[in-house]
Length: 427
RNA sequence: GAGGGUGUAGCUCAAGUGGUCAGAGCGUUGGGCUGUGGCCCCAAAGGCUGUGGGUUCGAGUCCCAUCACCCUCCCCA
Image (cartoon, rainbow, N blue to C red):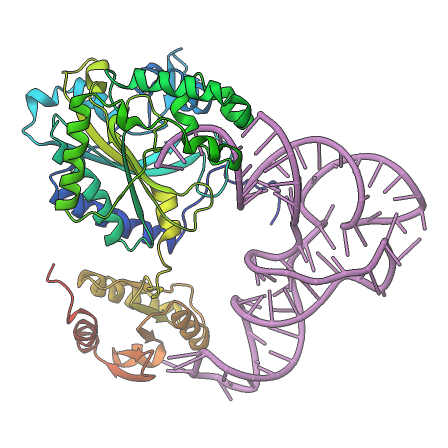
């Protein structure tokens, strides 16, 4: 290695094989499962005008205040790398008048990178990836349950271990203020028993204190007012119906009265799915209802509910893939310069059958060729040297059986087709 | 943004209180096997010990800074 070298910026990382392939499988599973629930994929830019996030997420949230990648482009416009996906999806909805141009259901999902300038640690990176869904225009509590069920089914389907579903209702703009006031009063009465962080935030974000993990605060939290007593009738009715629907959908969950959300737009239903083995960042999936957000972004007064999955966190809790699948099934090994042309045509013929194949064009010894074939985990090697060229045949070697035969190209291709495509899909 | 830990070959790790301590295994390449992989044996290549300063006769080892990673707080997916 000579000269200056570079590394990926802090909090970012390269996704390499075979991990990239595991990611692709999980993403493919999301696409098929989400479609079963009527969700369609939407792709939005990874940067937006800064104001969209300030309005959508909340100007006083940590995400907007101190984690957003904000920059001015060469034209002087203020832009921001997206720190989450919901604002962009709703912006697209409003911009393209989905309510007038698209048929119901108004259900969308996205997959892609998000950016937050945070201190990296396990399960938390500056560029991270989310898979999220948004169901718009559906106010029924059954929809909340359906969205939660989708998240749960997905996590289970891809093999996440020990997932716990936590559900809560954080009330609405009618009833939450009274609860926040009650909390504030309670925190103030017990201020000296709280940790410094909580003393600092108890006025500005009284709900957040409920979520404190500090041992010191636990005793105080036990006696804190519970939101149930403050719900307005509609919120209570809604949450009851969500719970009924969750039971009907066979989603095992626990009520966590202290579960809160960090983004301003959430109301009523809030939920989180956590898994073991993630350290402090144990939420794999989080979401909730956000009626009012679409209107705040200039759209119709339609309700919404959705979730986002943290890809890095999800992949961290999936069991290791038992089979390190090889990328190639066949490797062509030309032994002389003269054999390269034959190998090139041969490898293309095999590929056209749908068999992943590669020709090692830097000519070498049989020994080195078979060694690379072995290392690549290939099932067949095709050896083409002077002997083969003389008779117009290929030597087809079955690597695992250690058997080989010298066949005409037609016979060899047919043998590969039979061995490799028997149970393959027809297309 | 705050606190703590770690950085030695591609990978995983060794190197008593600073003095041949820059090594091993795996991997890579070549050979033993003149056209045949895996197992075994042999050999070679590969490191300015993250980077930059400092202390010292002498620093992988001590000090400072910086970068990266890990853990916690914070925040959240």
